[in-house]
Image 1 (tube, rainbow, N blue to C red):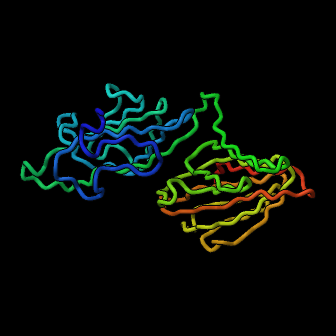
Image 2 (image 1 turned 90 degrees about the horizontal axis):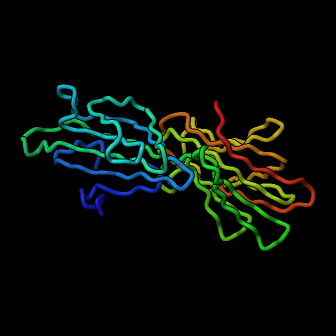
Length: 280
């Protein structure tokens, strides 16, 4: 009630994506105060990457006009206060627990007859696993056949896994899907098949920069890289271990959805489908 009672811009944010001053990059002329409670799931932390902060600078060492407070402890009485251009582009803030608070105050330029030319701030929000937490997030799907089990663990990052009506099919999707992600992003998932099977992969939606990498790596070292040109192309991956990674190589925007199906086979060993972070 306290949050929503401040201004219409105050909110609790439980999804990943973009947060900013209202109307960014259009400068705000009316005075405002808002709080955004950024919350991550259990056993996760909030990772905030500030893309840009451009508001009025300090006066006599204090942020007296515009101010952005970033409270990584999740408490309103703690945190750092910034103004001007004090946060460099790409700087990361990691919450101490499941909550990070953004507390913004903007001066009422309109009432003073002053035109504000500064855009405010914009940042991206991700959820990352808390290594101190011993509980493993697990999404498990078991088919009607007792011989087939297909499960997924979200390990890190903010890509998503959507269950389908079929027990043997997952949709692995970009952060914030169906809205476009804003780089930089990276994600880590682990998919398992518990019985002999192979994986059929199809990009049902693929629209992202050529510099962004969505790659399947087979044990022998060969790669299958999905690009925008591979929409609806079907590939069968037959291997005991397959690594898959997604990482943006720039501050780009895009979207993808990849259908991954486990198909039972008596001819192959157990399959491990592992998505993890890879440095390029």
